Length: 468
Image (cartoon, rainbow, N blue to C red; front, side, top):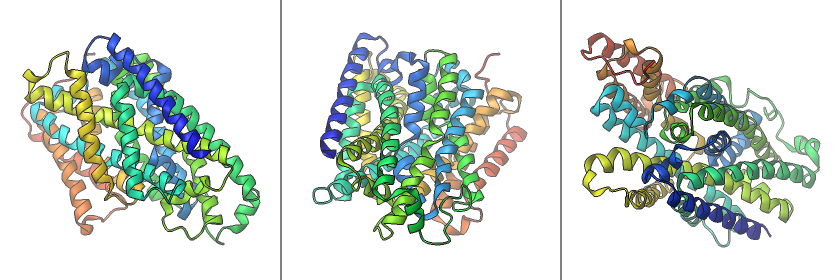
């Protein structure tokens, strides 16, 4: 029954993607139609794209994994995501839409020159590769828990990758937007149905609470994760909300500034409660399955112990979470490659007729790379939040240019982004560098220092991208 519901849901998503492919053929603009939905997404679809991007494998399987150890406070991961969406909507989403750009690196070039654009491409692709690979990890965990006799963790990730890529390949950004409207409804419907069913199966929340290891911070909103880590999530998510290609691209694709602004605020509100709901699954698993081989199996294990119908809906919700995130990431990465690499270095090979084909080709190539990266990733939340810290440089450069352009020098672009990448590499490779709780607490001071030095010693003012 669970497998039947899951397969049916996947077929529905493929049907929506096929319908979206017809919209691409009718529209004009080549890659802009495929990668940015012709810049015509309405408010509801903008909100669904943001919520779908946020509520992925890290926000469901990853949060439950963390809650299996620390309790309800793991839900702050999603709350930080939602807060970021609201802040971006209030302050910059309208600006982003009015810029009429395709990528963050393109924005960097307009403000800080060609060198800033090239290093931006490398940094953005690094970030997107890490995040995308983690969606395969989450999908592999689901399939392993559902059919352990059929799938290993590795083959589960491979099947996940094939399905994610297929939906992205067919429907483009319109397909991502339309499927995410359905995905968000299914995610919340599945989570709520599964929570009710699991509570009934395991004797109610009082019985579950009584089975938990004594003395743990299971239902405390703060102490399990700790204020320091929660604060780092807030800083990281707000930072990346301003400058990750996959997030900013949603604003680039909105039909106007109003749709971008309202869509981000609505999407942020939709994201806020999801983490705390998924954290409850981790708590239930800790009470009833205290000896799991991997904490990442906490949420999928609950799924296999509830009624088949609800379990199937829940399975679809987990897949919806992974699909909704992966399609946005894959299309964001394809946009980077097409606009900032292919068109720049091989312009004669790109025509309006073959842009969509080349865009789909980059989706396939990027998917293959991120799948192999997924085979080596461990610790879903730890990996994702350290890579996202690189966006401190982009956020600083973008926000400063919008609100305080007189302090921006062209030299700041290249050197600030390079500094952020070097800090992340040092943090990743050398444990001695980890003198603060999270790498983001090093990223911001270093980026601010480099930006200030560029202002002091730079010779050429940056161009203001916003014409007031």
